[in-house]
Amino acid sequence: MRTHLGSLSQHLAWRVCLAQAFTVMIAVLALLLTWDDRETVHMDMFVANKVVDAVKGPHGSLVLDPVRWQQLNEKAGGTLWFVAEDERGHRLTRGQIPAVHRELISRLQTVGYSELGSLSPPYLDAARVVIDNDGGRRVVIVGGSPKSGLWDGVLMVLRLIGPWFFLPLIVVTLLVMPAVIHRSMRGVRRLAQQARQLDIGQPGARLDTQLVSSEVVPLVSAFNDAIGKVQEGYAVRDKFLADAAHELRVPIAVVQARLAQLPQGQLKTQLLSDVARLGNVAENLLDLQRLDRNVDRLQPLDLAVLVREAAAELAPLVIGAGYGFEVDAPAQPVWILGDGLALGRVLANLVHNAIVHGGGRGTISLRLDGHGALEVADQGAGVPPDEREVIFQPFHRLRAAGNGSGLGLHLVKEIVQHHGGVVSVGEARGGGASFRISFRRPVPRH
Image (cartoon, rainbow, N blue to C red; front, side, top):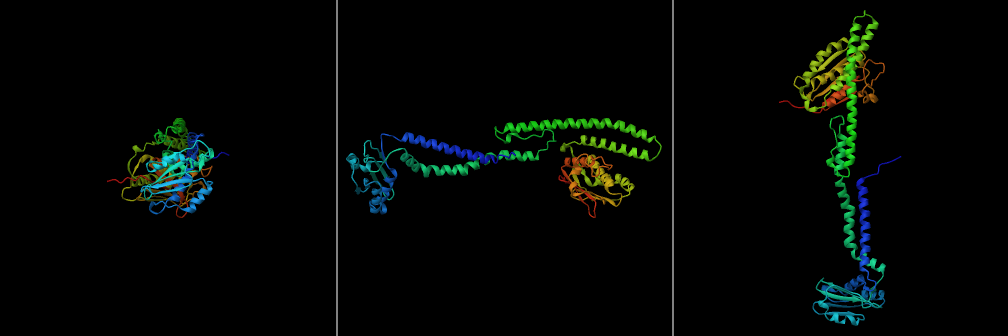
């Protein structure tokens, strides 16, 4: 079983960390190769700094800490030496000073930070000049603790650059780089949101390639090409259904005309019902193909007037089927952007569905409130909870032996979505099915 690769931002951050660690290792190695002179031995810089700290007294005076000096000297094998001089000419000396540095020591205040290497054993003349300006200028030259070899060089380099180099690098790598990578992936997240909201049924529906970097553009372009192929398939299917529905209308009309010439009887009634059902399928298919998805063509429409007019046309059908009929629509206008013919078809399909599944008893109600919420309810058996989503699928019927075509509710959903609304089914007050439609684009008319 294959799983997803996880967060791309995290993968990139880890790879950047590894790349930076590898770069640092190469840089340190290169520094060691250029810094390490096999013919020259240098003074241990960290011992020199500790000696400077041991010499420092209050207010920058030259006061040697004997305990610290003894510890440092013993650790170096008793060979340490130093000369410290402040700006007032005070001097402090310990250890055996090599003769080679006596000339330098006589002019110590004129010397800046320096490192003096040694070329011959025992390398005790290797020295380091350290400048300390805390509380006054002090110049200290320290020697007697030579360091040589690659490992000592590695430790010295790492200790030298560690606090000032690795800490900012770690902060940048662990905090700044993930934030930068996360921000750079913002276009991908926006593209994902666009993909969730994309309606591939809309002509020209595509993802925006300008939201992502050039590396991701081929993937987005391939996805857009796939959408184009799906839309081409939809177009072929829609054309086939439209052509088939048109071709069916003529023979259906011919059969209906010939059936009308037959003598009255149960067989004629049944045949007329079957042909009417077939004609209804063809009309629903044509309605689906005629449904224009261009919302810009919708016009301001008074939904209250539409409900009253549709109720007047449907009342004889409802009452003739043995139902009571209640209509409740506000007297004031309820404006939406809509297509009157398409929404009239919605009301007709919902009322016809209530007639078929209402059980031949009770009351069918048609209600509209001032917010544009529409309800068609009956007092039949209702719709089981596990069927309330699938009944809007094409050719789905609650009862296989029913008289419905399975396209009416699908057409209702398509038209409502075309108007930017939502249709759902639940349980009516007192039992039965309740189809509720809410339009999300109410437009006040002034």
